[in-house]
Amino acid sequence: MRIAVYPGSFDPITNGHLDIIERASKIFDKVVVGVLNNKNKKPKFTSEERVMLIKKVTKHLPNVETASFDGLLVDFAREHSASVIIKGLRTVNDFEYEFQMALLNKTLDNDCETMFMMTNSKYSYISSSMVNELAGYNGDLAGLVPTDIIHYIKEKYKH
Image (cartoon, rainbow, N blue to C red):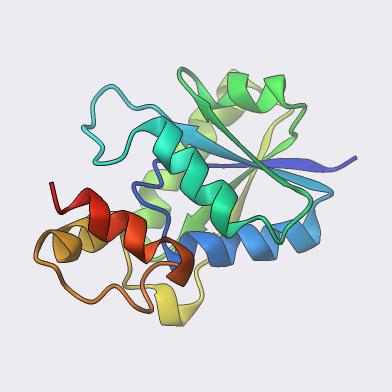
């Protein structure tokens, strides 16, 4: 069975993230979306909320699972029997950072490969931080995040 892990903060999940998940689900037998609990970041959504939002927008993909994790990505991949880490790329800057991380992960686990997937050009400008900033000003999120979760994001910013 070919299993891949797609890690990220997903704070919140965007249409760009969902595009990568959908495309990866056609290539791999199983895709595990790994929601990172990064101690260096202060996410707007809890890890439980992020997992819930991802599950909501991937329910049409029977071979996609979602789980949160702390610690090393290669350990999370190993726990899920994944041999591939998927990284979505929007820009050259993304590539430089992700290339370094791929080399580090390969050093930590020689059996785990990293696969880079280019973001669909119509989503290349979207980032979770941009979505959060826009939501904070009550901006229109249509086209940036899955329609099913817009009300959850807007609700988060009412408080």
